[in-house]
Structure formats: structure tokens, C-alpha cells
Length: 98
Image: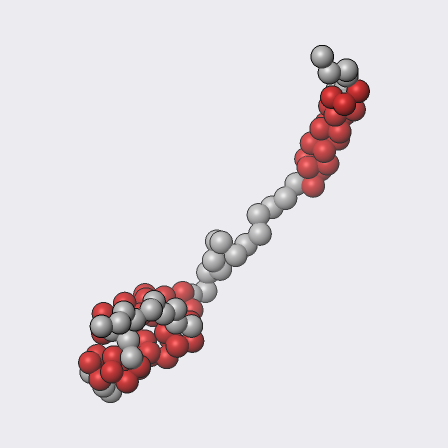
């Protein structure tokens, strides 16, 4: 008896299967046989689709997509401070090794 190798499904395939499950035209067993996936996997994809549907139609922007505000003056000041510190530190290669 040979083991089946682990499969990675594309997001488009998952969406297609989940939408078919949401439609309800076929049973989970029929869908599992048609798409050659386990019924539990179809249930999981369907739940993720239903849970994520509100985000598609939401009016508020996602917090993760907004770029953080960057204070360029602060960054330039930090670069100048580090450059100054490096200029005053003697180079290790200049000292003789004992």
C-alpha cells in the first residue's frame, strides 16, 4: 500500500471548492469525490471563506496594509550620530595585535 504524497493546493482551487460547498448543490461527499480532497478539508475551506467574506466588503482599511509613519529627520539624526561615533572609534586593524 503506497502512501499519498502531501499536496499543496492553489488558493484559486481552494476558493473554487469552497464556493461549490457554499452553493450547496452537492453534498460534501460528492464534492470530495469530484475534487479529490477530504470532506474535512472542504469544511475548513468553506469556514475560512465565510469568515473572510466580511473583510471583502468592509469599508475600513486593514491595519496591516497601511505603511507606518516614518520620521525622516529622526532617521537622519540617528545616521549622523552613528557616523560620528564610528569616526571617533579607532579602527581595529590599525592597532597592533599582541
